[in-house]
Length: 115
Image (cartoon, rainbow, N blue to C red):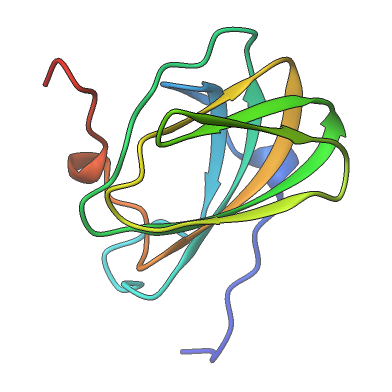
């Protein structure tokens, strides 16, 4: 088995998420380390948080704000944010972003306040 994994985002189906639509790479049972997502943010992303995950956002396209624990911070292309576990967050505005999740993304660790 190789010591690397290659992902082609144009071959990954998008899935619905609280932010819009996400293409998630490197999600597999044998990879607990980290994952990378390309997310198309909708205008009204939902506030959510993670109990275990740290996420790093990199804004590729668009602009707007990140709401982080109730504080709104302006973002533009090449802004990057490290979001620690427990931080309630959402993007406000239309954007395309890269998200790196550490450890690997787990759908069971995506929480909305009404959950």
